[in-house]
Length: 128
View 1 (cartoon, rainbow, N blue to C red):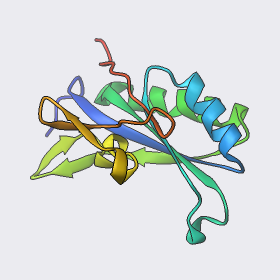
View 2: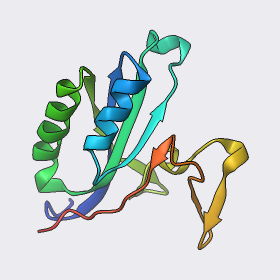
View 3: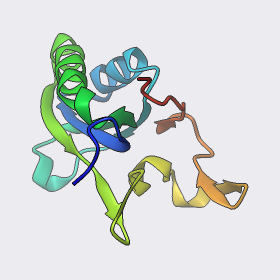
């Protein structure tokens, strides 16, 4: 069983009627790594915003409430979130590190977005 003070990478999902509203919301989530994706056919024309950061397990409910309020203030629909697991361990959502495939680059052997228009990268670890 996990310690509730354990820090895990967590990604929130939200949908918006326009790219502009999704990006405005992403701007208000400055301490998150964010990515705005164009609508897919199954998304009914809505823009997807993913916002990830490290969070303590015991603070997850508070983070849900915080992000949901920001999303709703910008006219979006909050769709909760997820922890991504790789080889049985929680890891940052790989999609948050992706950018336009033609603009990929690496820093220290890790992929990072080359274009700030799709992904705004910041780091923050939830404190005690």
